[in-house]
Length: 428
Image 1 (tube, rainbow, N blue to C red):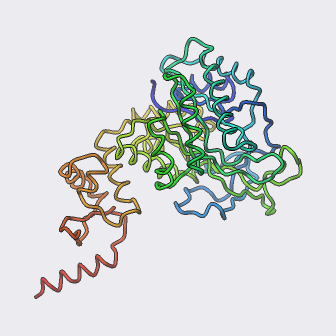
Image 2: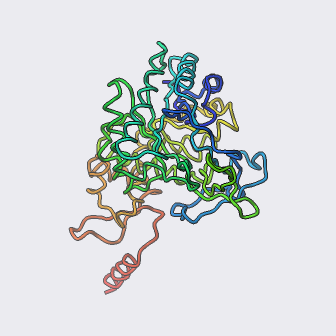
Image 3: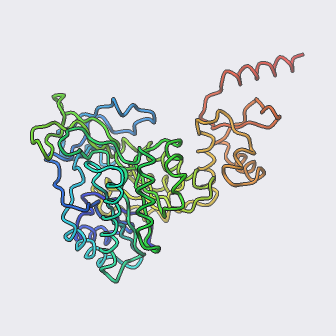
């Protein structure tokens, strides 16, 4: 495959002409817009707004359930590398025969080192249980047939199961549904059924929204061997208001006047969440010896963001924001040389993730070795080579082993007491 930069499922990847333009610019990992097993209209306009006062990443732990962004009257960002947006389309879809034909045409324009992933979703606004699982299987098989309709399939065939959309609205309602990936059991049933239905050589990608490490573990642990890649993160569900305080989005499929409170947050505001997601997923993958690839996305604004996600464990990076604002982004990225991280850089990033994990206050060399699948001696060398990542605590474990934590984590009260005790003992 060519350089692993691409564009996720989005309005940018909804037609063969757009796919061709992006492929010619050097976007090599392209995901065709998410489609369904039946036609569905888009939610009424407006569907996309720039947001005020969100020119920096939101800190992890922001209460998204209460967070409200304010739509901006701007038609373009003030800073093309530091802005945020919200969208509310509701995953519209053409009839199956039309989008399947478009997929086949899109594949025909790819080079042999490029990949088109076809994204699908079931009718989770109206279906649940066995009916929803069956609908996901049905639309995934339609996508597989569409790929097979063209003899040239680039790097292979791949289906993305979208478990992450934050702004679809159930029929007859005006409240956005939660992303499917937040229900681990339901998501796992869908993934297993789709995997069983697809041909063995069809790659299966699952797209997720942001999940903290514990939630990610609950979802991935039972299906890690069923998937070939995990993509994330999708946009984050937030409330979006206009400057008058009323919802910025208006209208549903059933009521043109009903307000839509929620939208999907994208742009620089979600960068910290994307980095945390990819770092956690890469650490889980290594510690469990899982083999799936990671497609990182979310808040990717420039080449530094691409290099960061690759360095912490992503195998490929997708960006809709940079692609929309900088169509020549791949050329700009490669102008700085191929940003492929070394094995030690990848291990250093995984070490940082393990030390920053809030599950543990301190880590032993042996515990880190077990999680990173290294020997304790190799962990010791890694710690010595990267003093900017790890600091050694003055305390010891009950067994007398050295304790380590992330350099950025503050010294604890227990450490201060132990340090004081050591000083008093030394003075005696």
